[in-house]
Image (cartoon, rainbow, N blue to C red; front, side, top):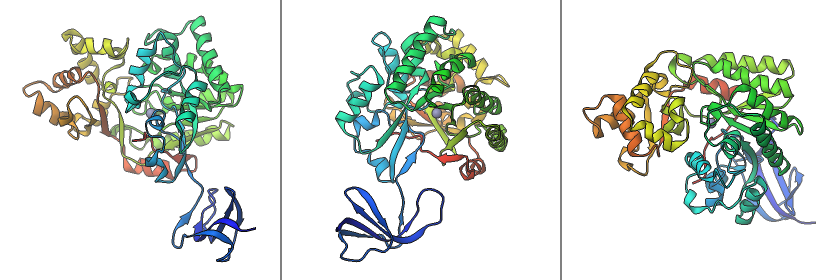
Length: 420
Ligand SMILES: [Zn+2]
């Protein structure tokens, strides 16, 4: 029987790490039916792949295409690069489950990860409903969904920084159980972002117990990728060890010049843990800059209670004094981007409220638009003015570290991007 398609003369990479083989691939009814020489007349259609690589679609282990796939179902920014599968719902932020009462808080929480949110209707509540919404809208990609621990916590506790009590704990566990039953692949945490940053290890451990039921994945944006990188890796490994579940360290890196090179130690920690039977891996993006929301510039206390509370603090001189003190203090336990990278290495990526600051670093912005203000005072003025609705790009990673992580057999490449 004639094949539908022959891809001829390409270098075939099978995706298992084997060397490329120069040969042909024959396809019938959507399945590969032959790998080997195929004659000119044996297929209806032929693609000549001479000089090109032929391989299975790439899996992006860590991105935020969650709602992008609703706004742009053809996800061309991925498909055109050969990425046919995305693992989404990362860094503690998933689009479900949502709760009527905390809906507005959830939307504010998800805003930095959800460009083009005006195009979507937010009618789903459960993960199954969310998946159905995507299916009805169409998608050019295969998607594996994680449940965001931050999303879960907001549905139960809003932005309250207090530890979860027994009742709250059991509600979060039941939401997670339902999401896993709906087909989610695991739980993600984003432990620098409130409310993930309010979450103690004990609470994470208890939640992760639900994953053990079905061997689901725990993916984590570590509590600290700077001064306390090793301690944060240890916390993640401990969760995998306790429940015998796979652990994925998200976008693994060492942030801030004083921490460059620590990655060699954490890769060794992963190797050792694996020797002891813990299934731990990591992903890494091939950039020397990180990108996140500008609220991450502020100390954790400034983020308690959600964005409205943060904006009030930014307008209050006593609170500003306290924030500045914490940002300047040496050896702080939170991830301090300003002390780790310097304001001259922190650029504003997008800011719809003041597009003229896009592409400029924080020192330039203060000098140009808040002249005469002390640097941090100028920064607080800016954050208050744009209501923290801006994303930043921080050049804080060593290229040698990026190369070391990407070359390590326990890591895989990820984009940490969204569709546009
Ligand atoms: Zn992250």
